[in-house]
Length: 212
Image 1 (cartoon, one colour):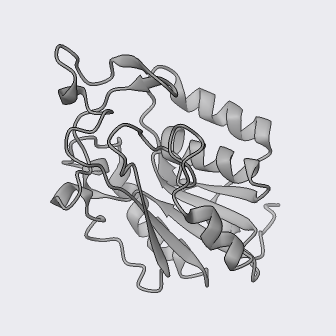
Image 2 (cartoon, helix red, strand yellow; image 1 turned 90 degrees about the vertical axis):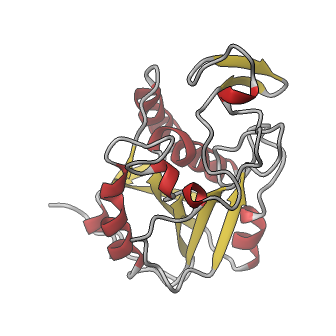
């Protein structure tokens, strides 16, 4: 029998980067990414507290392959905070690709957190830029409201959802991943690495129907 996860005052749903560029027709489309939108809309109805996050890159961001002569998407480079995968230009500030998917409908979401805004630092996690030091402001928002259990849904499971889960655990928060409300890119085994990471940090991966 599947156990139900009961929601309480300290719970928050973080909807990660459900943006046009990560969905069908976008410049960095996650396979089957559109499929999460209806499921997330339904899941969000059960939460009093919802936060939306948004990749929000300046033009010529360091993570764009187009910024580096002779490089192509999915190449890697060394940067001060480690290895950086180079991506197609995506979620550029103010462009249609950076907008939330047109079918995402969560009118009671209380906050939008934008990340990847610094030209020289990429940001997978919704809590910290990839240097793992520069905050996005999300952890302060949650602490101020005494929100201590994070439910994650969105795109992509093996990057922004994974890094968000890791940072949430690092900050002492409990983490639940609504896995049917996520999709993965799966670059060079990144999906398997994400699943191993979830197990190592004690993050729960569940079906959204079990959250009530």
